[in-house]
Length: 335
Image (cartoon, rainbow, N blue to C red; front, side, top):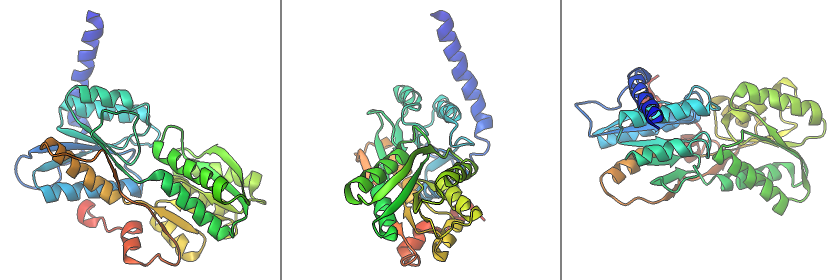
């Protein structure tokens, strides 16, 4: 018992020591003297455009509030649950005032989050759910409804009949699992003439793995598939590339989730046929603001939806759509 406790204390001390190095890239946001609150914002990753928008929203909130320091750090890969757990433990050991977290896995992050809460640090969850009733709030898209919208859009471009493929993301990601469920359920309930010919393959966390997974599916189903749904940015990007490389762009309809500049251009060109858009900037902004409200004793909602819409070739230039698919992040993240 004594040895276990000593080991635990050593680990916490080691993590605290690592924080100085680990946070070297987490420069404080805002200017001026010491901040009243230090809020850690932990994404699923730092590479994809979606997370950059969340970062920008968090910075926007810190600047508006003036007395908040945002500490931004996530795992290098969106499938590295252990590294995200280590980041959570580091911030807990450092004693930040609160943590805004997009959990990579709804179950794997439960224990470290609840240990942090037991240590007196509040957690607010954004983007993807966590199996815990101890968090202060959950700020995210209605991901199930996003899947419903995707199914309806794909059915529209297919004329209500044909063969469809769902390329899943990865097990444990609550947000994408909800989108996938909404898509599958809606096809079954509303579009009986669309047959789901593959829905059990996972793309993995990177564009490269998604491209490879879709290439494999196209080798098997490319001659009979009419449409594809990709439930997040790296999967949609990988599917787009696989279709291009196999000269099937445009013939097989593709509906994705989230946006990159290349995917927006594909939508303009008619080789992408719809994108379900979230509002990641709003998630990052609300996450920080609501955490500060909680720290100041104000009541906050337990669930805050941030909205979801479908952008198509027809509405791509509407101002509300441009703000979502091509946000200007330079004022927050630099050039």
